[in-house]
Length: 349
Image (cartoon, rainbow, N blue to C red; front, side, top):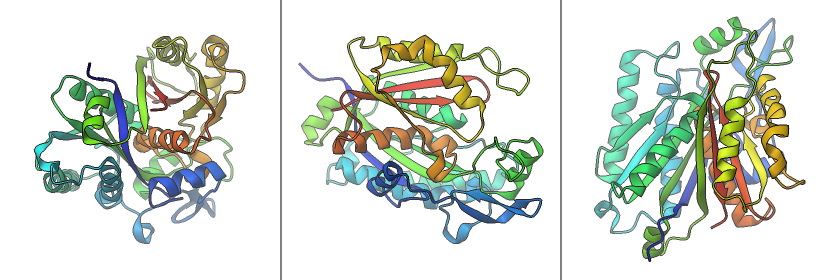
């Protein structure tokens, strides 16, 4: 009987604390921070602290930096998955790419067109096809990309899929908008976004396909739950965490006997996110072991937005391989300002 469970067989990263997945995850586990003053933007004479990756600390819209930063992460994930063998071009492999919004301030239509052309060229070279799907849903985008990729693989439309994510807040035009909205962490504001920049990529396929290729599974995707708050977040109308609680309860219900000792969450520096998790705790987290832990990479690399879910899932694979997450599985939680909520449940292979 074939094993149709979906598994992760490759992970790659490029972040402020590492040029690959093992380096990044080792640094995050050790609590290393690479937040530093950003020379291109400040407020009231104080520089802004950010997590930066781009060569020469480039101040530019995300579309101008995405391909050079995400390409090494995709190559790393494919290499780890063993998809550089001679059979590569015989396989149907699609790219599901979580990106920031194309309507973000400073993103010009011609630059967006160039970005997509560069991604198309990259994928044509790697996979020999044009199966590229974009998801533009901020922090939850990686979970949606994972859901779309999982569906395509499960239906047999693809042999494998790469789920990638990229984020860069480090563009003065966009930072100025965030500052005007009162959403940046500055010297006179204790709650606000810590801007970051990062890329991450995963390879997913069925356990049966991985076994046939003799590719080791790094993690099993046990569940993926998506929910929606009726309204988006505002300072005057904070969420009551109903959608997040439903998503968490739904993921846990997929295997009631599973134990999850770790949750990786997309804290950004804004207070509403830990507040929402605090509201969820008495409703859903009682089913977790007493020693469960909350991990959040923002203090080391800043808010990585659309790259968060691929990065967090990749971090889980490293934690499983090196056995520092404790027994059982790992949950990944993501939230958007506009009300989308996602939980990804992962188990060791």
